[in-house]
Amino acid sequence: MPETGAQSARDVRPHAAALPSSVAARRGSDASFRHRDRVRGPTRDGPSGRGVTAAPKRRDDGGCPMPDVLLDPQLLAILTIAGLVVSLLLAVLLFVVARRLAALRREHAQAFPDSAEDVVAVLSRHTTQLATVREDLGTVHANTERLRDLLRATTSRVGIVRYDAFEDMGGALSFSAALLDEHGSGLVISAINGRSETRSYGKPIVRGESEHHLSQEERAAIDAAIEGRPPSTIHPEPRRKRRAS
Image (cartoon, rainbow, N blue to C red; front, side, top):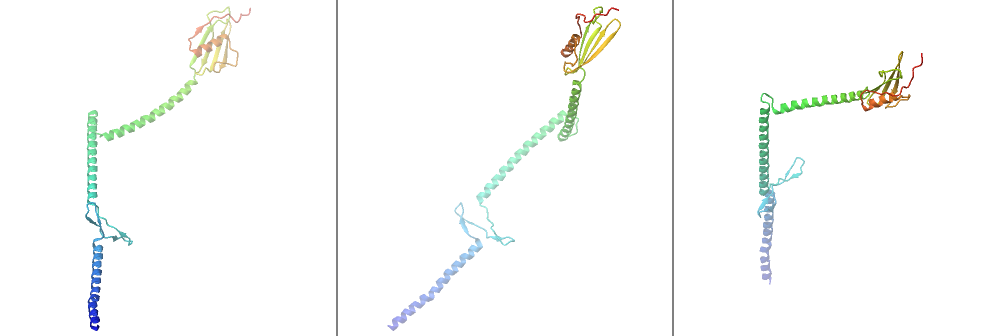
């Protein structure tokens, strides 16, 4: 029995001695994996099934980690194709603009063969001249409105009626003349002619009416002025008889 116990103790010692070596080997393997992760960084499966390595993180001036991620090859290809398409479109647009500018220059040379200015200079000069013309037209329009207001207040309508004021007078030497503006305002003047004397009267008119009594001849002269009729002669019944001398 003592020998058996000693033998068992001898059998256990190798296992006990071998246990630390396996643990140390496993620990060394874990350390190698951690060292590889620090060097290569963590791995992941990309779209093609192959591992894509992420670069190790670096720190900025503030000490914060800043990852440097490598772009996927397919994404790089898409961005490259998109850049080529945009460049092609810009080249086509530049070509179209150049052709239109050349055509415009040819038309300008045909229209103005003796002009040494380019299209931009001619358009700039014409734009300045057009602005000056617009200012002049505005001034002319304002002056026209001012003159129109003045003309409305001037005498623009005249009506004259001739008649015989007395039964012993002939030749229609008496008359009534209406001098009115555009609104029918002004005055009416009457001249009564006799053998030995002539009397004249003036009455103000406002829009075809007067605060004074208007005779038949004066009313006829006002109507003729408003309607624009030419001078006329009426022969009403004599209103006055000469007094016996």
